[in-house]
Every structure is written in structure tokens, then in C-alpha cells.
Length: 319
Ligand SMILES: [Zn+2]
Image (cartoon, rainbow, N blue to C red):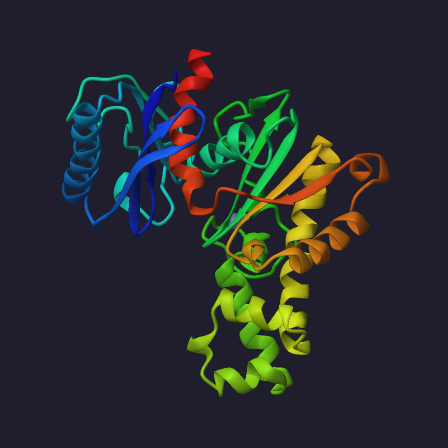
């Protein structure tokens, strides 16, 4: 007999909601615009949750709890976002467990990359592995760490901030205040910035022809497609991104010695050729004993990982 929960994944532009079974199956899902202020967001959040509760009650799904995934460092005991919340300024210092008003029910909260990591661990590509490093490439580069089958949060819920490992001292300025953080090179905006520099210098190849001098046409999808097609300039762009990611990830692998590295997000979706390129860069940069048994796999759950993982947070504790 399955158990059911509601998972919520708060994003910079959209907030996703889902009724999730304990085997990871999504019964129903919906998405709403996150909005630009707290008042609007509270309406969106509670409307989304209430809509799913109504659906669940109609169909006889008994909801045991709500799980909320949010950007930023989240105190999982209190539900409070610690300091600023990237891309959603109005959520700074907000208590995620206190903003749900449409039902009186147990609420769990965690950082969005941790939730996605947990989803991959329990019902995704990480099933059966005990020690995992999870990386997701998007507007930034997020991470999650599983040690001995449990999410590792650190002493102040700030663990796995892998995107802010400095790989180029004095390099590109990062939103965290430092210079040269890995995510300024390996995230989607970081890769697009590198692509502009490389294309302006090279002025050749298929990718250059396609964009016809208009850099606003550059997307991760286009770059990875031309990388897979063998365009030499697209390969240089992906090389730079993969080297940057590998540099940050290699340090974490030397430190943690995981069995499995899961790569999720925009660029990883381009496929096997990218994972192969990344794998080579990681092997070159890691200590042999740390990487000899390491498996590298693409994330399986895609954009659903946040809502699935958020719902799963409750069962982790309940079990
Ligand atoms: Zn940074």
C-alpha cells in the first residue's frame, strides 16, 4: 500500500507542486508563477497546495505531510532559510514551515539541491548506493552529499555548496561576493559567457554560422547540440565548462571518496558524450584511490527531482 505526500519546489520563476507516492510516482502535478513579492507568493503557495489537497481528498489519497524545497541554506529543524535566498530576495530569513496556512499538517523543508539529491538517491539513479555526490547545473551549480545513506547537511546546513569552490583566484565576480567561484564558469550563464568570448575570438565553425553574430541566440541546448555534432568551437566551449566543473568536483571527490557522482541539470541532458568528456577531466584531477571505484551517471528524474525529493524528505525522518 503506497503512502502519499505533497512536494513543493520553489524556483526563481516557477513553483512546482506534486502529489507523490512513496515509490516516487507522481500522481498529479502543477506549476504556478512564483511571483515577485511575499504577498503574491503566499497566495500562489497555498493555492497550489490546496488544489492538490482537494484532488487528493476527492480521489481518496491520504496525504501524510508536505515537503518544501527552496533555494538557499535551510535549517531543516526549524524550516528557516538562513540569510539570503538566491534569486528570490523576498524569501530571505523566511520560515518555510510557517507559511503554509491552508491545512494543518506536518511540514518538512530543505535546500532544493539536497531535495533533488535525495530523490535521485531513493528512487532515481542513486538507488542502492550509500555514498553519493550529486551536482546540478543550472543558473548556479548546486550540490548534495549522501554519506552512509543519509543526506549530509554540515554543522549549519551549509554543506555541499560546491559551486562556490574557488577555481580561478581573482577570476569572475560571483554573487556570493568572492571571485573565481566554479559556478561562474560551469553554470549555464558561466558557459554562455565563455561561449561569447570563444566565439568572438574564433569567428568560425557551425555554431558561429548559426548565431550569425547574435549572441542572444546562444542557449545550452544549441551549444550542446553542436558539441554532439562535432563543431570544433562548440567543443572548445564545452571543454572549458567541463574542465571548470571537474576542477571543483575533483576536490570534493578527493575529500569524500563517493561511490557515485550524479550529474543533473541543463548541460548533462545533452548525453553520453558530455559525461565522457567530464569523466576524463575528473579522472585526470583526482587522487587514484578516490576515483578508482567511482561511477559517474546522469541524473534520471530531470525537472521532477525537486518535488519528488521534497515529498521524500518526510519519509526519511518517519522511517
Ligand atoms: Zn561564489
